[in-house]
Length: 231
Length: 118
Image (tube, rainbow over all chains, first blue to last red; front, side, top):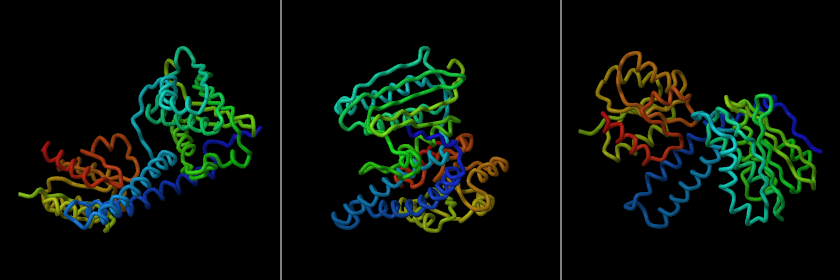
């Protein structure tokens, strides 16, 4: 069994987050100049159609880099969102609903075991939904041939525990060790920022995220979050 | 009369871009390269209609500029540009916040909004 038990603020990740914060600043400024200059030259009265098309592509690609930067902002904890009381069950169910078509098309059956009463916590609801969407998406991608996705919530000792399990291929120890590293991915066409983003969201909530996995047997992700009153 | 926009950003390329865009859209502009220069410009010329302010600048940053303006009771609408997120209370102090890289049309919309409110 390969477990990821590294502390949430290991020296390596702490340094990496600071490097990321500087990188975001340094990339954003030239990106704004490139995108802005393209926007300045885009109006209908400037250049030919071919030039305008190229400028539109430049702007679109700048937007794409910008999207990646936004994910890194969450990872580096530079993101500050408005926190409120949110129902963890609702966020998890919303995320599952959002992916329902994809899960069903992928021949994946979903088993839910949600705590009653629903746990609540102080968090930015959108970020929490983003966290769960990423975890569910990962589980879905781990089962290209179909399988069972289990999701559960529970309240334990003042913490909200959320688990997402798949019956997919599992991960090797080498992969588990790098799983939160920005841009690390084993999947074609992915930016490798999904789990870095999850790490950033959980750590900004003062929580913890761990993986239990065995090649060929599947993976369980456990997220522990501080419960709010009533949770 | 054209509205007057004070632009404070430590990056020359961004100042040049914003000046070009705003002048093209009929605004009068004055670019400065620091928070301190922005405060000085506002002290010397009370006729600015809006301040477009980068948050992350050497010396005093954007949020500190807003605090200084509050202390001196100089009232000028502020549109803050930020690559990183700003603490919530500072967000609330700016009249609008745009995350870099900004969409120029969105900047125009925000400027028009704050000018309408004046």
